[in-house]
Image 1: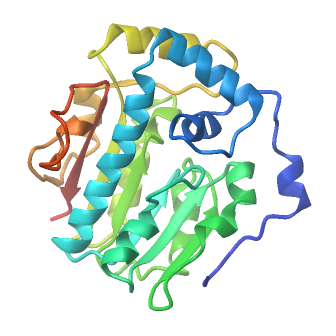
Image 2: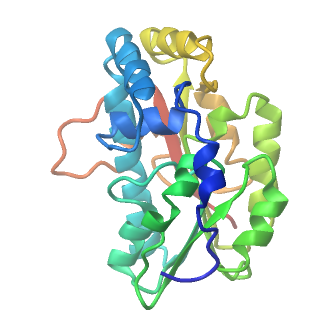
Length: 271
């Protein structure tokens, strides 16, 4: 455990509202995690009653991220990761995948959810050779994120920016694109951008379930079209096979035949 840590204190726990379902906790529930409350399980069960495929989307998203990180470490030689909107710790977190391959890897996680803050120590176990730290910050404040991340990462060296199911929480699409641009502009040539988000225009049942969820009083998550997700990579070099349904991104040969689902993503290099 190393580097700059914001330790969770009583105030963090007091901010946790257990009366309203929260997307990070519901996602954790769908992934099979235990860091959630009855209100989250109820919301998650209500969602799956309408669209059972959301569990496949959640788990496919995590598998996509694992394959991205494996490529970045093994093939691209990346040793630094800035993971924004990391959510609650489950299996195969970014640092676990990266440091298993390259123990010297350095990872900064960013989130502003109080329950994630309360579990920060669970995220911060690092190899002795590397580093893992947590920044309590909002994705809407990229300048603060970059300044805090620079305390652990050398941002003059190639770094992978991970934005997994976080950009959909930004209601204004143009602002979401601007944030991606700001973050990538601060990283040097040879850095990478990994994005995956829920997609609109693929599965009407999924879209109806998500729209109903957004109207329930929970924090909304906005599905984007595949073209909108692709536009996050403007000016970068998309790796094959481009922006695709996440099970189709370099599937492992031992996996079952992948399905086309309402979750798209890609990986690109900054020239």
